[in-house]
Structures are given as structure tokens and as C-alpha cells.
Length: 269
Image 1 (cartoon, helix red, strand yellow):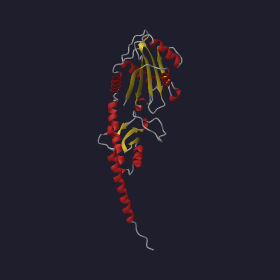
Image 2 (image 1 turned 90 degrees about the vertical axis):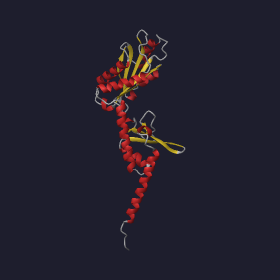
Image 3 (image 1 turned 180 degrees about the horizontal axis):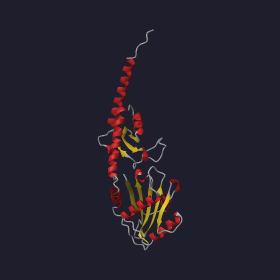
Image 4 (image 1 turned 180 degrees about the vertical axis):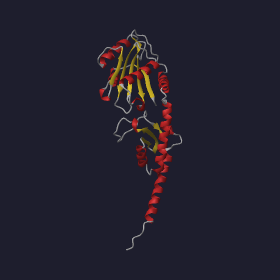
């Protein structure tokens, strides 16, 4: 996906503001509008003062995460980031007369920007409706991609699923065990995680290694926001079919080994 964004209205908190500004997460304040405070706490208190001007709005803040694909943003300067986030905010309907902050996080595989905006303008009027705003963000991101001749999130999703499917097919063709299969998927750039219940293996989730934020994959568990379930790649892909193919490969391998041993010349004594 060339551009993606998640957005929602919230009550807001100092803890959430501190998270966005967390230096340990590689956070950098890109821009602040209609705010004079020098610290996170000072700016949060300013936003709270405006929020209290209209107590009818129970969720007076908008929070969004703007995430361009790393292949798109890899050479962006600070000014490029600001320009693209400005465009997203303008298209989503955030006007110039509200308090607004952009924080970029660079600690993940995909750098992204946290956006925090007051829904109320400086005289307490609610100027940012939040009805269907999540869907609107998807539409905005698709339009931004199309205008730059870049694939949309839907387009890139199709491409990625097809690549994963091909990796699964090629890996299961030659692997002789689940460990072997998972290792072969890993070498092709994917983290393949089996899910199990009391009856055994009942599914799998696959994620591009580039989208995993940690290099320590020992006992790592994918959350539901990352990657795809096996059924999302292709409904025809089943763990039982893969397992049967692995067993078949193992039997063929054992048979070849046995034939090879039988064909070895016997040493005369």
C-alpha cells in the first residue's frame, strides 16, 4: 500500500501525547500549529483549554497515523514528510484554524507520522465531523496514490498476496517438515506462524519480514494487525493440504535415500 492511514476521534490524554513524543521511539516533532507550548505537557494543556470551550463534544480530538510505504518514503526529507501530511490533513478535512501536531516515528520498519488535532477551532466550534472518517481516510490515501501514479492499498495487497502464495507453493513443493517449510518461507522473506488448538494445527498467519519491528523472532507471536491469515491469501490454501504435501515429500525423500543405499556397491571382504 503506497499510503495508508488510521484515524479516529478520541477524548485525549497526556499519556497518549507522551507516547507520540517518545524519543525512544525515534519521535520527532515535525510541526505544531496554533500551539505555543514548548513541552508536550504544555501543548496538551493548551489543547485541553480549547476542548473545555465546548463540552458537548465528548471526543474533542482527532488522532491519526499516516503511513506511506517505505519504498515511497525512503528518500523523503523532513519537508517532504510535512508536505504529504499537510495534504492528507487538508483532504481529510482538518482546517488551518485548529491546534495540530505531527510527530514522526522512525523506530519501526515503516516510518510513520502520528497526527493529533483538536476538533474545535480557537473559538470552540466543532469544525471536524468524525462520521465515517475511517473510510474517508482510505479514500484520501487512494486518491493520493493514484495522483502520483502509485499503486493503491488494494493494488499492493493483491500483489503481496500473490507473492506470498507463490512462496507457499514453492516452499511446500520441496520442504519435508513444518520446520523446513517455515525456514524456506523465511529465506523468501516471510514469517510463517502456525496456530494451534487442543486438536492440533488449525491455521496460519503470514507476514512480510520487513513489516516486523523486532529482529528477535524467538517465541515471537504475530498480532492480528500484521500480515494475513492463510485463508486471506487464497481460500484454497489449507494447512492440512500443506501438511499432506510435506508428508508426501518426506516419504519420497526416504524412498530415494533407500534406493541410493541399495545401489551402493557392496565391499567384498
